[in-house]
Image 1 (cartoon, rainbow, N blue to C red):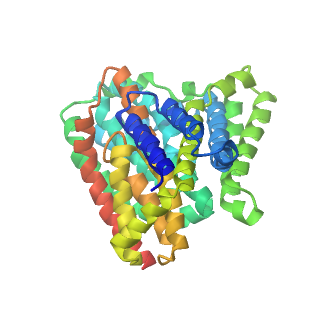
Image 2: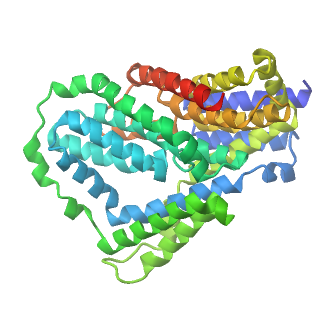
Image 3: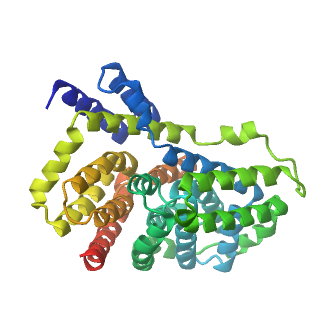
Length: 431
């Protein structure tokens, strides 16, 4: 490899290590890495900026704006409290209902956003019932990673894959939906065996549920109904976006724009926050993390590193399509566990594209293998996904720390079972 190629690899590996150890903010690492790629001449600015996938950036931004408005209605609190009341406060039923609600919500809002909204409410429910919240939080974040696997918008890596491979919302639902349903059913059984033991030892304070009122959770009923209508429109457009010739980012921006307009119009129960406040609540850190990663991967591609990795995969699998898919599936899961899903998927996308260019069998199964590996592998360690890290932070701040060992001990068996099911699915469906 050339000197520039080695420099690109050094920058990328150093950035990966910094991200994985979580000692420095990952967005800062990505931006510094991208800047170094430009500063040492690996990329020029024009190529670097052209490598940023605005379809992904604006899709995320649009969904963030929508969620920031919807949460002001109290919809998510209502959902969690209603679920707790429906279970009668029984821990085992909570362990089934809350993760299932989380999984379904994650498929349509993305798993990171879902956990930001669900985790604090779970703490309130657990505190009211005098239960240890950790088993519930662990089950929820793992369910969010599984549920988010089902759709284009359910998991940030899927947004990257969908944009790169030109896969639609409906494509993800048709190809990922069936296996996600199967894995979720198995997950509920395993979760009851894994997490239920701790909850069974405690008698929940059911009387405390009386203090929680779903109706009181609704802060603005008018905004709630406006939100439900816009969500229905957005979901319909996501399903039809390929037929209508729309990109997913356009759909998300339409939804955000509609909610911005409707939230400012009467009827409403209170004054809506200004656009400045709504925009300030966008997770800019995540968006700049994506931007930095796009530029760093462009540096690897420009120096021939990506092509070299693709050649290595071809040599290892002898271009056998099924074996290649299995290497991508299990390799993605393993790397996600130690490096986190988003940066790994950003790096793998051009490798899959290079494999396709070399004619390694049908390319579509490789995309689905990458999706499944990255999404399901995220349950192996808490480094695996941003949703995991969100829950760890919220739980720790509430006085209930979750260690790396504890997470892995619970999550790794679930991950292995999920990957075995995913492997059988890929084999039977695509080969």
